Image (cartoon, rainbow, N blue to C red; front, side, top):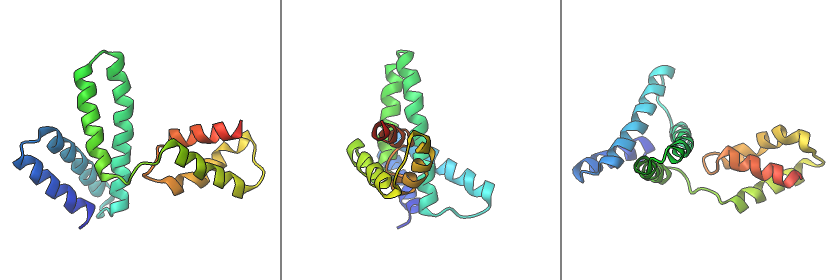
Length: 147
């Protein structure tokens, strides 16, 4: 079953179960998918759909900080619930230690690197952790290992 079909089935189930947060989150994902398909005039594959979901998760992480600053606990809880739903569709997220090990292996394979090579290291690591780790987490690991 493709990811798009799974999203449709989950949306139908959430409507039957009157799970508004799940329905709204899935609707948001499907709208983003549809928009990209219309813009690019092609059917998206599962990998491209995962990119959209990761992008939305990243946006939620940014927004949640603003809600915390504004003392809007209701919106923080709603956003966290949406993030948990988004995470269900992504591959299992890597821990910081796992990311750090991947970065360390990459640096070892590249030979001698300096702090000026952060961009080059990131370019090597990001495809390995695509959809499984946030770029800021990878960047933090790279900087820590280069110190």
